[in-house]
Image (cartoon, rainbow, N blue to C red; front, side, top):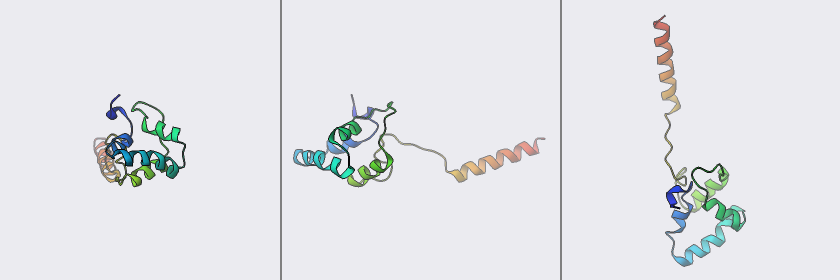
Length: 101
């Protein structure tokens, strides 16, 4: 199972630590998140196609602990048009429909 098949980059971050830091991180992180060690390991192993997920506030905590930007823990880029752009295209579409009548 490759790390790219995981939903979150938790293991990517942990694997960059030296052995001493890694061991400490595995002890400290569950305490900070307020979860059991087992839950922490479950978070690390959530697969892409899984319906299982990490609660949003825990994701934010991971990103802050790992010094990541918001959304960076997620293992895929999500792109969506800005709402203002969608408004403009919707108005244009409606105008064209009205002129076509």
